[in-house]
Image 1 (cartoon, chains in turn blue, yellow):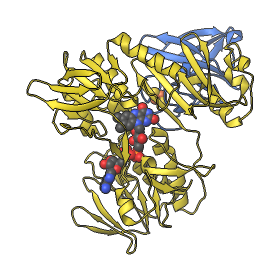
Image 2 (cartoon, chains in turn green, orange; image 1 turned 135 degrees about the horizontal axis):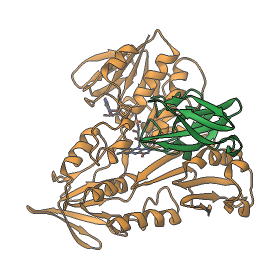
Image 3 (cartoon, protein in one colour; image 1 turned 30 degrees about the vertical axis):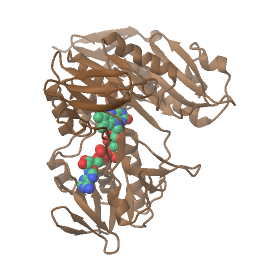
Length: 102
Length: 399
Ligand SMILES: Cc1cc2nc3c(=O)[nH]c(=O)nc-3n(C[C@H](O)[C@H](O)[C@H](O)COP(=O)(O)OP(=O)(O)OC[C@H]3O[C@@H](n4cnc5c(N)ncnc54)[C@H](O)[C@@H]3O)c2cc1C
Ligand code: FES
């Protein structure tokens, strides 16, 4: 069953610093970019690393372990050593609260 | 037009794939001695030893992926000779293959131990998937494993083996861990992880003779005798540059190439760890890193298509030991002063020269600072030591 999950109030987001929510076994990182909120899987598709520990700039996040780069808006793996794209999740803002669907 | 690539490892694969991306027409032939399709080596001393069969980090594609890219992959073929005059290579099986341009991407091999007794089957090295599987098959609780060499590979093996409940002793001639690429402060940290896990580290210890006896290998060292069931030798790598040397190319601890990967012969290039690459200061340097095998082939593929795209990345490599990730950036020569900036468990050691410029860095569990630190090093600007040390000022604000 898909459901909407609360992340945080809009005012609590800082640019380039994601908020992380755990839902069951999934860890989701939610970013505020200039054009809205984006939710991606927080786990690198190369080996095991948390992308929320990585460097983020210009709509891209870089894995802290081996520097694979992902597009936050599309989840696309932009550079080896990752080749598999990240899962992405729809987001919305309800009454000032950012949510994603999973 | 045919480009022949010798060596189906990481750099060989990258050269082939990048070349196909730039040129849809050319015939690309990738010849390799190993029977496995190309793979990246970092997992060999990590996940594979911990029992993972096919870690994703191998980046291994199947034969179909090569066929789809119209890269002719021929495995299990060792090249015996290169004839520059007739532009042909000869394989060990006796095949003569002509080329229009040649890329030598033969990598390196593990340096073997030159001491009496070193040919016993209980003495192993680690370079290939076959080596990693053979070592993995031996790791069992209680096994007495001696590791010769406290460099990156020796220590990664020690970490994996102790996690498999082996009894591990590391024997190192020098005074500290990973002395070739990190300052003393960082060696201290790394040694701390190993000792806490139960690894015995013996520094200043020179292995003189191996006495292979039935029940054990007896290792005679400058610091007494050790007994082991298995000895893993991790004392460095030797470039596979004999083919190039015998063909008459300029070779000196690796094939000498310019920043585009061009050797001393106009139609021959070298890619990856076998290449010793000319730097802007005029010196040639050979890198034993994933980075050079990944990105220098881009310069080679471009040059093969007449595009000038010299390789000039800041040197970077990493090691993963236990739960720790260590990233090593830029220079680590003796003259640098190392400043430590600590932020929770995340550490950044910054190597500053006498003018106050950051020249190198070691990041421990702190990969998010890699890009900012690369930029700070590239900028070459002098900075105050106080600011560099202060974790309250994010490094990304300094670049
Ligand atoms: C165990 C291990 C762990 C590592 N871990 C890390 C790490 O954590 N981080 C990091 O940055 N780097 C690491 N490295 C270094 C990195 O993997 C290497 O630098 C990289 O593999 C070099 O790639 P290459 O393509 O140049 O050489 P290779 O990958 O060695 O490929 C060369 C290929 O050429 C073949 N060949 C040689 N001679 C011939 C011939 N005459 N005919 C046909 N084929 C031939 C070889 O069999 C081999 O398959 C590690 C290396 C090893 C061995
Ligand atoms: S785990 Fe992310 S790049 Fe390797």
